[in-house]
Image 1 (cartoon, rainbow, N blue to C red):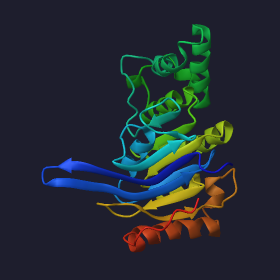
Image 2 (image 1 turned 135 degrees about the horizontal axis):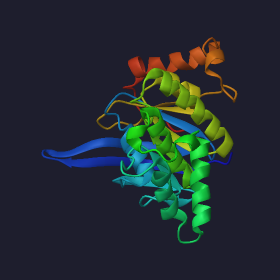
Image 3 (image 1 turned 180 degrees about the vertical axis):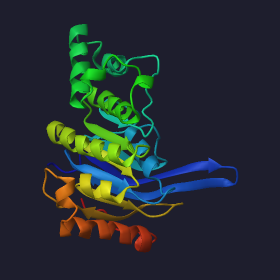
Image 4 (image 1 turned 120 degrees about the vertical axis):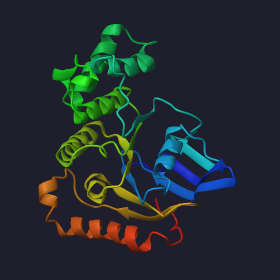
Length: 268
């Protein structure tokens, strides 16, 4: 994997409030390699989603610079697909139509309709929803809706997949199933992923590196943990793996004992 596919250099984010300025993030430095799976973890209010939105181009940093593939991030782009905690599906469209809408927006000017339909079906098949392509959101479960959201993001063939707690609102069994599916999808697509989570086990299971944020305001990166568990990963086997437990303990110790320490320098 080449270095610095995503570069975050001294990034800051502040918001105007009634009594002045709220400093959400300061001095954020992070390099993400191509094909790497990064999770952002920390307590509520530490700026995880804010940082993700900055990478997505949905929010513009008030200081520093963010780059993707050597180009400055200046706004949203299909090269950075986003999956939110809320699936955000249009209720009057079928699963197929919800995904097709994104495909048409990205490829409609250069590809025939038959190819757009093929892209849509391929994305739905990737998340195991071929059988539900003609159903509307109210006719499918919460986990299936989230899979449609993932399919919609993948259908655009993004260089980076950005995920903001995509499984946070799901029950434990559904969440575990979708985590396993995500592992398979990322292995097949070799996607670069940045994902926000509150779940320590999810972070260890999925990540190549876990980026741990200090508490806000003026939050920043406190520590970065490399997860050197071999892939493919199987959750049942990992449950008794001493290295898995060591990583899990390290994240918990940071979150509950070391999160307020000064920022550690980024080591790509």
